Figure 1 (cartoon, one colour):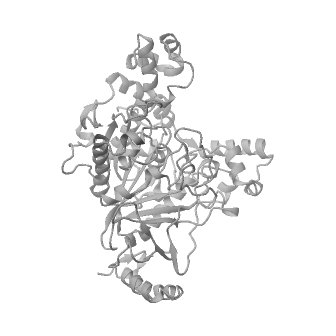
Figure 2 (cartoon, one colour; figure 1 turned 90 degrees about the vertical axis):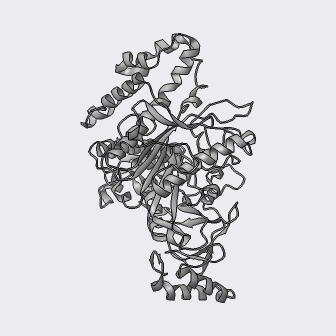
Figure 3 (spheres, one colour; figure 1 turned 120 degrees about the vertical axis):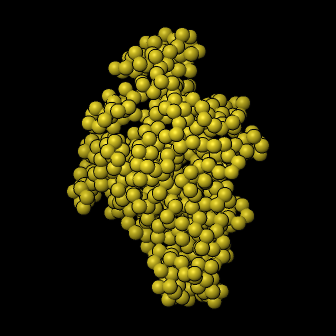
Length: 564
């Protein structure tokens, strides 16, 4: 059966022949492989794969039957006059490109003395760092282009300021072995990826600037639509998933019209369009003003041309990235408005967060006491002191220390429920989780419980890979541990099932009800001691976050209050 590979494979046969003729001595053997690729019957592992830009050859993955294609360009290098532009098409090539080397990570700061270090820059096989960084990686178990497997696309976290698709924790062999094509991508970070400027806005046909990182993600998703069939993937079953800043991007893209038909499902892990808390999104005008002020202070100029002439590392170091904003095109309106009016993209969603998201802040500042806890009520609860007291009572220093960390975690969980509830109102599949499992920690490291990023090793079923900041659980104690490995197999299977069908349930897994099948105070809790339905926030906590939302978001944006 003839398969479509970007454009029709049949229409490409002459081009394939011309490309293969340039390979040289191996032309005859590669020609046969390329022709069978065009027919959709080739062995992906043994022959080159035809993409829109040219032919690529992968290398064996870490598991039998997995082929990995590293460093595939999905857009032109955003350098020179393309710095801060939305991504442009990647150049084509002739011959066969060996996809055996990671593309450079985007400009960012290494952190080799931090624990855990920067997983994109400080590992033994980390690539270089440069502006020429718009590359993606593909792990596929497919033997041929006919297999039509679901596609999962990882969007990394890192506070919008670090990360890369080559980070070992996100290597896709284990997920691919469960029957998906797994893709990781690079997007621009910091002030190279989140930069608004009046000159950019004026030159834009949409009157927009900023959110370059979201544009990078959309360009990668378009590349997937054009090319993924050749790797055995199904372009009609694309699931984006990400954690922290990556989850926020996945949450923001649900309000992005350019992404509507490129994605079908989303798994935001600990973050969505409001970020990691509850609030409105930053408008482009405010982001532009901040950039102009910082540019003048740091470089003595606001000229876009003069700023483009500065070294990328200096720009990254001296101008703060605005993060995801309402830019006027990719994100045309605050996503809370879109969701309130059922204008968001109609994707299935599996959303959630972790029980101890705020645990990494526990060592910051003086030790919490009951006296300090009570004295900080006004700052902590704002206009809702009475609701805050009811939600987080404390009568001892120990209780105060525990309660002080709860709002970061619980506010995030409340936010994730808004995402699930919004998609359910559209009639889409919506599932909500609360990750309560405590990973194992080395004796000389802080025990952070179910920390921020703590679920990632389980999602990727990569317990033997180095961790990502801040959830530094123990590789030594967890790698090969039957209990931990069994739980990782369960969590990763839920994610793969959702990518395949829009429903995480499957044989041998505890039943996961849809979010609208659960009472308001219940959630699917993921835990090695037994995953299943259990308590969510208390009614007092739910009421507290609803009041925060109504004050900070619903009122200013003129949308219905929470609970109405």
